[in-house]
Image 1 (tube, chains in turn red, purple):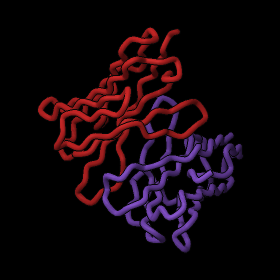
Image 2: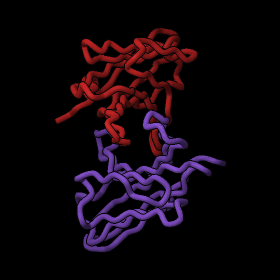
Image 3: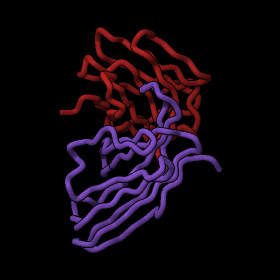
Length: 113
Length: 115
């Protein structure tokens, strides 16, 4: 039972264009969401997060949008750069005294120069 | 370097052997987490410590797995009688404060291969 779903295993984007990575969740208890980036042979690196009381959070080239009614969030990267090529994971906290993060399977982003 | 460190980075063992991994969290982080990642999957939660207390364990953590965090500093994860299904990347993370929304910072992981 995949509670966090990233339905696109891969995405290719031209350098300078927008990258949009999508994430859906099924657990209505999730109330805080994070995006991590992972390069091969490294651990995940935190990118950006959003609380369920917000619908948008922006940090430089990265913006996360949250649509609670649709249980959907997306990560926008503008402009995309070759160094952004990595696997991106969506993760969520469910609160209720639990400190574990639930991750999606990831989307591999390739930014083509 | 003040990031999370893990040792060893790679471990190859034969089925049935015991293995132990070490994680050193970011200094002064009182929370420490272990995750497992298999090919094509995202990290899956195994267990969580607040200081030296192990407060949460996943059902993935079978009785062959044990984790400790003596004195609330570094942590070890031991797998006894390893099986081929234990082959995975074992990730450690730490976070600084008491609210559950704190960002978890990950180490580079230990890749375990069980032959």
